[in-house]
Length: 300
Image (tube, rainbow, N blue to C red; front, top):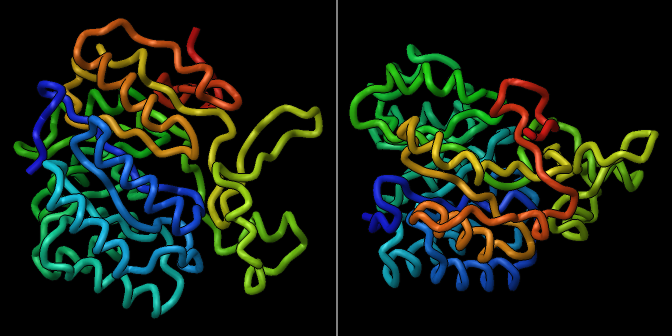
């Protein structure tokens, strides 16, 4: 069980969304062990062809972090299942026998509920109303992550009818995971077919930038996933997040400065002045969905 270092609100480190090398991942999680977060999510959530680490490696990292720290470790699963081999990996993760699993696809929810195992739902699972939340809580849901596209007002409504004992987590920092497709956009941008992608994603540790015809940054390509070009940043919203009784604030890892970003959130939760994270964001921030407007908007 994680030690709550931030009073009633915890910090989590979400799964790495991008394709990093084996050494980069091991180095990152060695650093993560020292970061002031309560929860660490581990695993590949985007593409099964990304094999820097295999299931056994993820389980080894989970075991080491759990044995050496007081952090809660959660195993994250793919958000789009397309092959029987992916289902086999999913079943292995769900049956690991030690760590709770984050389901990012309804297929994972089905496997976990059939085995009567507690679980977390990630932001790609469409929980849009209290009835769905109540149903999944009765099936073993212990924590849910607010879908990216929902606003603070929707969250307020959900919180008012949240089942007792269920934790709420909100994606608070990082390039927002927006869509998934059977096609690989990064491969296509190199005129390569998906089956011969040559693992081009590894050349873009924070996604490949996509701009409009006017040259404005719009999206970033991450294999079969599309993410926002700008960085979601809800650090200034911490007072409201606390008011809404959000239990966990999620920080999505980026290739640089993740530790400093985590420290800024940790300090703000403990009463320090809110810091400007602009220098850590390659293209500035956005928070539109939170306010019920277009996602790339930024509050003023």
